[in-house]
Length: 144
Image (tube, rainbow, N blue to C red; front, side, top):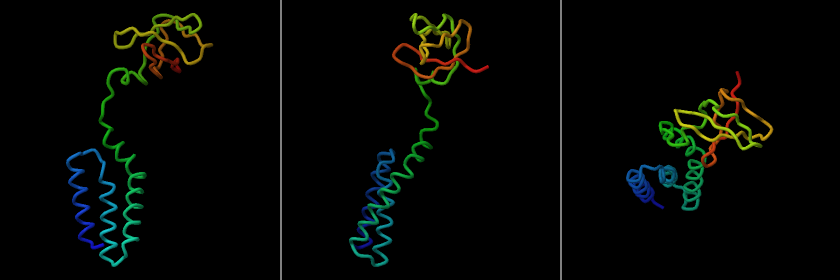
């Protein structure tokens, strides 16, 4: 295949990427670039196609997670997701077996439970929010 065909494929993939801005085709554009270089060096169609697919897959699997992490690092968590990892104060003793427990965070009271039924957490204890299950916060006592 001629290098110009691979460069045309590269251009189409870059245009699609520019329109979507979601990192969907950039990995395949890298594969097309490598295949265009291989075509320019005189490689046959089979090595070109193999290079296109392997380079595209390698870029997709090894660089996409890092790129997505960089792109999403400024995304602020909202709603209950913003509570994870934050501290709250116990306002009613947390006892899973008795079905009791409330915490206050940001002037809002939440039902709270622990992940371990044998643990009881007294009032005025600072806890860390680990999970959210429906309207209940799953908490752990913070280390002093």
